[in-house]
Image (cartoon, rainbow, N blue to C red; front, side, top):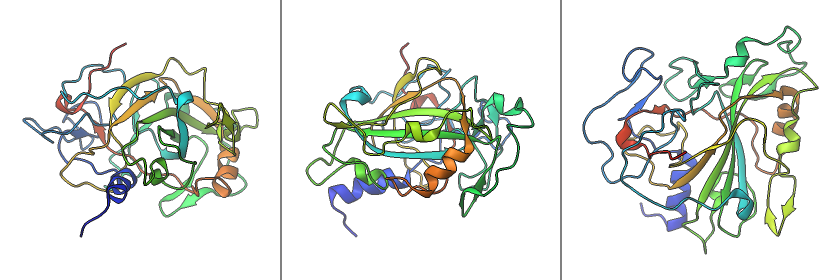
Length: 286
């Protein structure tokens, strides 16, 4: 079956096609936790992959493409989040487990999630963002992706909203923040980081992005997501901007957002296993 260019790109964006080679579920590179470490050539010809350990700067992928413009010079096209962090850093390094084999209950958790007060961990009055694979609870970790596109598009459902019939090969940038969810009204309100029709200099923009969680680590990579485990890497070229520290987020405001947002998002997505093979990673320059 043949697809048009837009359909092909949408399929890859939405499904997060990944490689069964060169990915791991922890930092031991093949030791424990169900890690998958493969040697030799993998995904030949593909560009650098994501997610990764942002504290490990080395990468040997030879595919080069230009960094996307700053997010303030692009259109916000989608916001979504993953249960547990797809990326890994010193501040979110607690391995969540091997999961169900489909990207759920795996990934990494914020270290501060183990240091919360009883009040912060108090049960919520109602289920939060409940989906097929469960609901969010205080103490959980989520990784939020604000996806930006160079196309003249409006924010919408799915990553297919980041391109159009006249703009099928956009520059893509993902602003990223990892949060610990707490039952605390004084914690950060997710709605302040939403879109809600906000415009700046003629561009669709989030109302705000986190600014106090460290300098974002920028690198070249790909799309992520667990929906496919085919033996081929994601061909999409994405500039990532991942903040290295966790922040506390009011879980009740996330629940409100799941009930009503521009993106038809109502549950957490699963995670792609951490990519550890240097042949599949770009070199990070700090």
